[in-house]
Image (cartoon, rainbow, N blue to C red; front, side, top):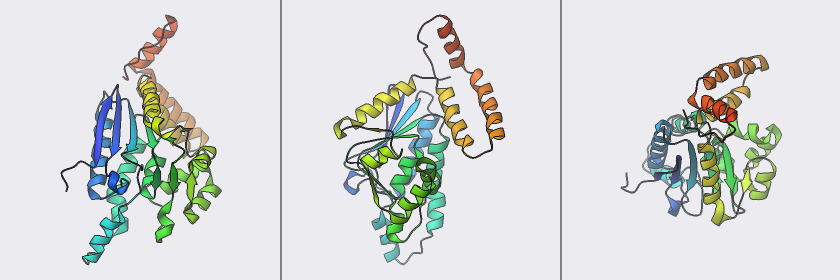
Length: 265
């Protein structure tokens, strides 16, 4: 393992900023990066002072996906590779950490997000992009099927037919189309992407963190269950939200006709 960190976690005003840090390789994912990314996601999740997360990449790309040179080197050594085990052990825990985090996660997609890098972006709650951003479900280009959550998130975001066409062709989704089909929520110039994403994340971090986390959980749940089950789950999460300090603050602020000061508890 190299001494230089491949994933960096910094903090600013209750926002955790997770940066993929292999810019010379467009933040391609090797074993070190996948391990460090999971570590930083867990750290951000457990840190009560972090109330929103931004995921981005250092340099010209968000993430170009699996480092194929890393895998090729192993094959040249004659070692057998189980891609299924790699997905289960390296990628799936990362995607679950993003989806289950009880805080909003915004991807600042600075450049290309390809293969597993596209999956990472899809697993975030929101995606902010630049005119240069491209999403590429590149798996089919090397004879593979989508993994790392793409088969789950992509059709839910853009619809079944469009998801099939994107995944089967592996074509580039450029910024304008990404915005049009709901793959991204906001587009800004490249030199403003991080600042705008951070400003938005700070706004969320000032909100009722418990309620936002429960909102995220309820909406994901609602996409999987019947109406009856969704209604019951809403009652469950509302019970939990109603016990939070932020709910009490919200009620008191409303009665006092003042802006609430949420503490994320």
